[in-house]
Image 1 (cartoon, rainbow, N blue to C red):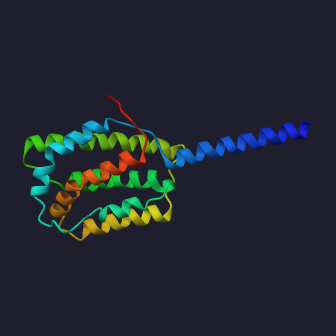
Image 2 (image 1 turned 180 degrees about the horizontal axis):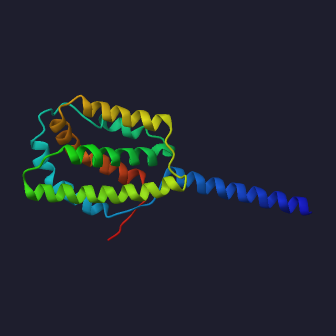
Image 3 (image 1 turned 120 degrees about the horizontal axis):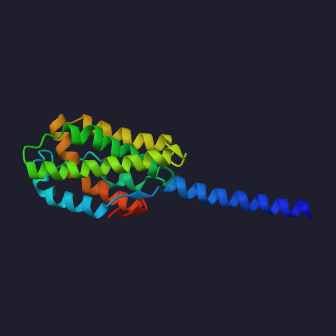
Length: 177
């Protein structure tokens, strides 16, 4: 009888850990106001995209690249793309219009907050980076590097809606408002 109870307890514990671990690997809760980010982007989208001198080129290498991301890689790709936007795109883009600059700064600050959240997931070992995730982000960096820095930053900012839609689809988003 004791052996049967121990076996059932062990099986139940393993199943619970697997379900928690799978959920954690697939999605980390992002606590930020995605509506505010999307509104900020929509207010500047037309002005940013009007500066795009390469309308037939894409940095995020089409929506299909992001659509093939497996659930286990969502956290890693999100973390890597947030870093891409914060460390490269926002820094490389030089905006003379103060209103647009304020909106971009607001988006960048929200991205920094999301990075912090995903860093916590990674510290809890819930955000693993597999080779497939690394390959996707490498393609995006390679696409960025093929353009002149200013053009690449403008192009990436103009494609921000693709990334925001992907985040909304692939993450549990809790509004911090």
